[in-house]
Length: 426
Image 1 (cartoon, rainbow, N blue to C red):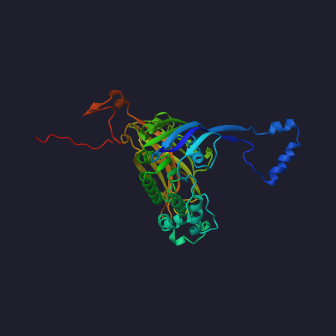
Image 2: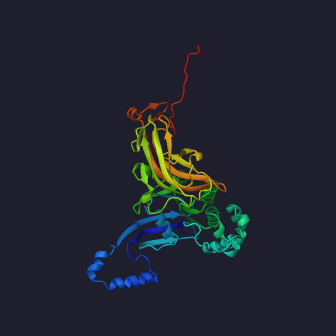
């Protein structure tokens, strides 16, 4: 018997941009469309929006064996989520073939299938059924799901009265306790509560170690490194590398496929934030105020983030910067002063000053986040690998240091200039 869990052959998915994206129209749209047909042909041609297509996936082929844990990495828009949606039968491929051997569970769009008018208890049964769980299985896991979601007090309250964090906790708990042979996981682990997010990552670790087949999309390279034994690097709808996680991550970083040193989030296709805040812009600056992504190891540089607060913010928030090195290790996290936010309805710019002679030779990737205390720690937004900066030591690179049994650049996550005292004692 074959041990192949997933076989994909020449898979392609095309999306149409422009007109005729929806199969059904409102009465108003139908009337407008009929009226347009009465216009002269030259008028209609001049006002029509041209229709274009994009290939979200392009001739993708691979096999995944039973029990493998495979990470999927790549820039936003590379085709990662589209691939999982095709495998989960949420969308159909334009061309190609997919074979799935085993029961599939997916954590792609957490909360799909929840009904706002139903209680948490009723939605557990409803959502569990949608995800493929039998009634007896739901009943057997019911207490475990409730304990994991931490919403026992509100179990018989309609979910329309839940906070966004409570809603996400319950949705994740139901989906995470399904026991499929194949689990497809998109970047849905960034739920609102930071403590619960850690709990979710722990649960994902359990699933991976239990011998189930897992495909895991994430921008968290540390998680890819720790959970996965194999990784796909996707770019422009194609798998350009299928290798171990370390090699895939290094290729992702070294080929310029990572985030920039300046970003305008007002031009993204979706708003980054929630009802409390919106991320606007961010950039790296050198000590002279120049926007750059290349910093001398001995020079100070600044990380800046601009965001707007909305008047619904219950508590003054903390801006956060999370620094990761090229291997996905978290180097440090720094938070700003919550008392700096005097007006709950305004635009703010947070700046973190990183001293020279602190970080080692490497490329660093920076998460941008805004958190505040509200029923635990609430994450208003968390944009992963939003910025990148390369710290270089030209002297180190020129000398190609060789000492004490190692060669190459001086090792270590950081390389701070510390206070030393050397003296002769005899």
